[in-house]
Each structure stands twice: as C-alpha cells, then as structure tokens.
Length: 273
Ligand SMILES: [Zn+2]
Ligand SMILES: [Zn+2]
Image 1 (tube, rainbow, N blue to C red):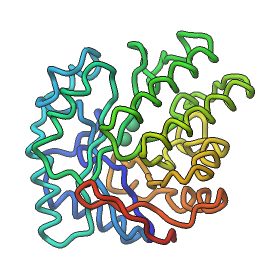
Image 2 (image 1 turned 90 degrees about the horizontal axis):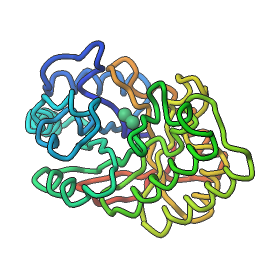
Image 3 (image 1 turned 180 degrees about the horizontal axis):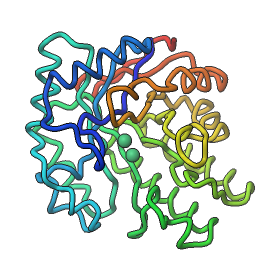
Image 4 (image 1 turned 45 degrees about the vertical axis):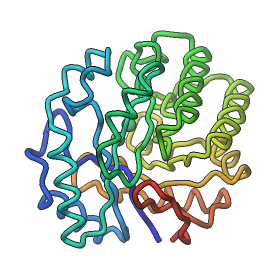
C-alpha cells in the first residue's frame, strides 16, 4: 500500500483554491489515482483557521487565521461519505506552553491523524528566509530545532512528525559529529514518545534537494521500531503523490517493510508498496 498523508486542500498563499469542498478533495483523489497512491490524507495548516488564533504569537501565523475549521473538516468528512479514500488530518505547529490549548482546539473534531511540525523556533522561521540558520550559527540553529522537535514528539499531541529535519531546507548543516548526536537523541525521544516519523518528498523540491529526513535519522528510527508515514506535502492537486515513490523506495532501502495507516487516531501497519 502507498499512502500520501500530507497535503493542503487550501492551496498556497499565492494561489488559494477557494472554498473548501468535497469536490476539490475529489480532484486530489483523481491525481492520487494517476500516481498510484491508494489513500490520501489532508493536513491543512492549523494557522489558517480562526479557531486557533488565540494560541499563536507569530505575526505570519496571526495574519492568516481567517478560515473556519468547520468548513475544512466538513469538506473532508463529506468526501469520506462519498466513499473516497481520504483521511482527515491537520498540520499543527508545535509551541511550548500552548499544549493544552492545542488539545482543546483538536478535541471536537474526528481526526484520523494529526501531524506535528516545527516551522518556528524561538520566534525564528525554519523554512522562510531569513531563517533560523541565517540568524544563528548553524550548529546552534540545528541544536535548537531538534530540541523543539523532541518536545513536539513528547507533547503527546501528534501522531506523526512532519518533515522531521526541516532545518536542513537551505542546505546548511551542522558539523557531522553534531548532526549524528542530534539524530540519535531525536530518534530516542521519538521512540519513547511512541509517535511516527514522516518520510517526505517535499525537500526534493526545495533548496536542499533531498528527502526528509536524512538517511542516518531514518535508519536510527528504523532500528528503534518507529513507524513511518509518507508525504508529498502537495499544496495543489497536481502535486499529490509527487515523488512519494522515491520516499517509499528510500524507506525500503533503510529497511522499512510497512507504512502506517490511520483511522480516528488508531494506527496500523500495512505492507509498503
Ligand atoms: Zn510543514
Ligand atoms: Zn505541509
């Protein structure tokens, strides 16, 4: 089985796709069929929804809190009702101190899974320029990013960690000794927390030109029995499933034989491929 559990029904800032609807979800499913994906999961950004506005302090997020979370959930639930192979997810930014607020925000809705993301660290963006790695010495940027990712894992809020080494997006890396230590520590924390890691093709289309996460981190996750989810991080229907075959092949090379499928936040393993 091949799944793609990370995509955005809303579109992008530059070209939002209009109101959330099951018809639009159907366009994503059609593209999934064309690319050999068996099941897709939507994971729109939490900060586009006004229900979460009180939780955030980052201007970039607050400027975007306009949509109604109910409209998004209703569209995906309607797509499910039509029998489409879709799951209801959300991509949620982790910030320390608002764990209870995030849990309350999530509580009323029938999520299949929730992705945890670290897009901001100590107020600095990770994947927008000038980013964390431009503001701080690279080793320090990496160290802080992985502290936040480990705390996201431990928060108990998330089912899988999205693009787990996003800090490499601009191709700037901490020295190898440090990245080794960070990868091992992070895999230990993820194992202890009992969450999955995402293998994402999104990095192939960014400056770094690589899958997330690094082979060393994914291998450390595999050694510890940490399950994976697969992701394109599509922001438009035509990108659904893009390079997910490469993500799956990479996981297989590292030793993975199964992929995680979620239903109402219960997970099970299905043969990969
Ligand atoms: Zn993200
Ligand atoms: Zn995303």
